Length: 130
Image 1 (cartoon, rainbow, N blue to C red):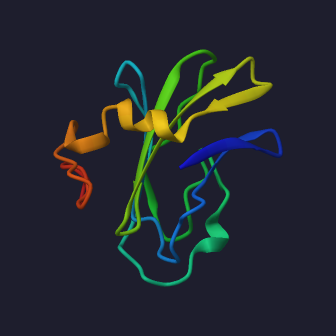
Image 2: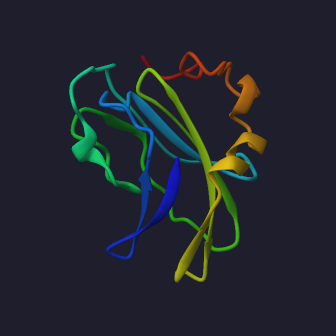
């Protein structure tokens, strides 16, 4: 998952995103603080119009379980999302002028290889509120 600015706001995109709707997305700080999370039903309808996804703007088919908190500069944030397939990434906001996005570094974060919340790359994290 890649991150950038759209209209001056942090936005997520998934270049390899399939046509399914995201059934969850969460952003955590490098210290482990949950910054934003939403969940929704697994839908196979076409939701490509949800992208780019603006930070804090919950998609129409989902509900925010953790409202978006303010992102601070120079902190690495990790992303995990799923639409049946798993997406990972990380980013760091620098002076609110640019974002240093490194999707590959997401593999070093707490989500890759099931290191956090029972995520195994095929299922949602435990405690998803369903």
